[in-house]
Image (cartoon, rainbow, N blue to C red; front, side, top):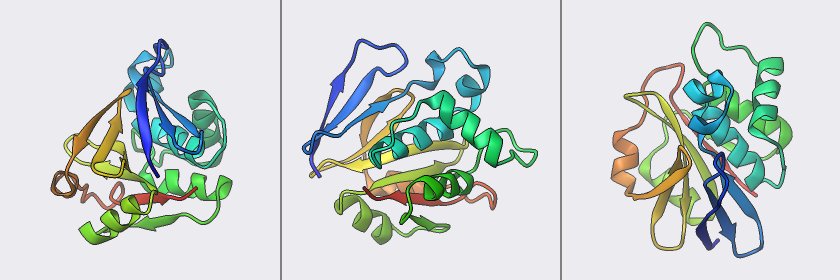
Length: 171
């Protein structure tokens, strides 16, 4: 699925991804929110938000935080794990995949099929969103984007038993 990335004039959502089928996914900048939890630990919330938009569900980042607080606990951790984000997405958009130890071929296959990949990185623990634009892998995080390689993704794979994994989001 081909897409283009456009700048917006909105502080909280500085970029948007426009797909060829008219779907628009805003890219939130977690540092621009007034809520201190979103600013400090909102990477998983922004990934949750982007995944819901990718599935066609229009919710806000604050709604995502309220939903996770109501249905999932932090279990003594500072942020929500990718497994908790996946479970929440699965409840709202059935038919998604989760890999605890994804291989390069699994990630590549899903990206080239036009799926969105949410990936938990390490040092520091951070959730990023990946999409394939037909020629390159684009990483979305903190209101921006950059081009990355599959080797760069795999080298940042989180190995902590609580945080590790990747979620594949289908439309």
